[in-house]
Length: 435
Image (cartoon, rainbow, N blue to C red; front, side):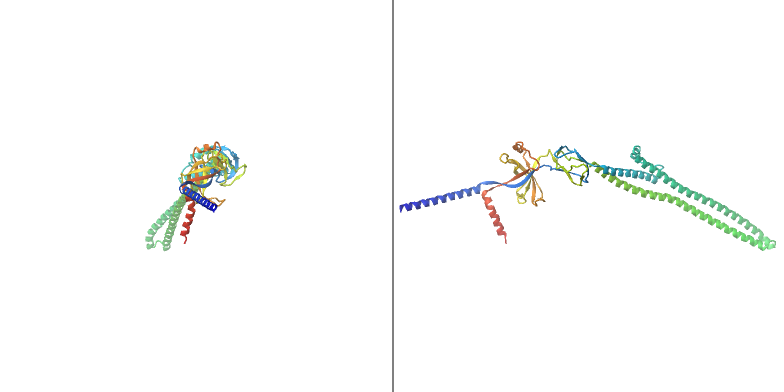
């Protein structure tokens, strides 16, 4: 009996001791969870990039490769020649445009001389100087001078013919007027003769037939005089018409010259623009480095190969740019990230036991989501700048663009209890908001 009581007391003691231990443990853990602060972090994957980004080398129009001056991994300086496109077609097109432009400028000078009725053509000084060295320019000037002379001679010939016609009409008028005067004078004589015969006719010394014959002759002469007057008027009308034709020659020529001058000026403007474009294209047959760095992903290896318009020929990785970390932050975590926020960077490529975390700060956050077409995932591009002295921790291990990294962007400290309670509180809020 005594032995049974001792066992019961021992059991109660162990139960009580266990309860006390459990209570102490719960109280201790609860107190720690309620008051102990744990630093939070937004975790994101990232990679090392250059601060100003890798430079794409492209060509707008593309073309045939004429010469390759670099190789993969080669270091280049800013404006170094990377490769040259074949410029045969470009130079041929530029030569054609230049020749057409020279001809049009010469034609414009000739048309201006014709418009102003100048004695000779005043060509631009540039054309005159080049004509001494360039046969094509000399031929263009010679052709316009010849045409200028021929057109002047043609107009002068037309006017000379009309002037000669006017002279002939004036001579004809003079002859008709002389005949008219003769008829007037002859008519005057007959009139005087009739006056003298009227008295003799009354006395019977002259027959009536004689009187009538003279009167008929006077009438005939008056009719002839009228014909001469009409012919003179007609000839004067022809002179006026011929003079109008002479004026019309000048007017028609001026109208034609002004029209040609307007068309030529418009054509010169068009060809000038095309020539500027051709010169720009000729300058761009030489593809040069946008800045100093290293050639990467060289896609051209064959002289005579074709580069498509806008094709990326190669990449230039800048050598002097600072390396930064570019992280992909989930849209659900972006509200916890802000510029200036501290972060820790880990490099999976290095031995984690010997390589420490690197300190960095958030410098930029993209304004909107970026979508990865390969994975379909959306994220905010966030850049972090390493503290200047952090690279010393790597002990000579190099950081290169493209190297993967793990980013831990530090958030505000929270108690352990809040981490445990938050999922339940969030769930309860959603439950109570449901209808």
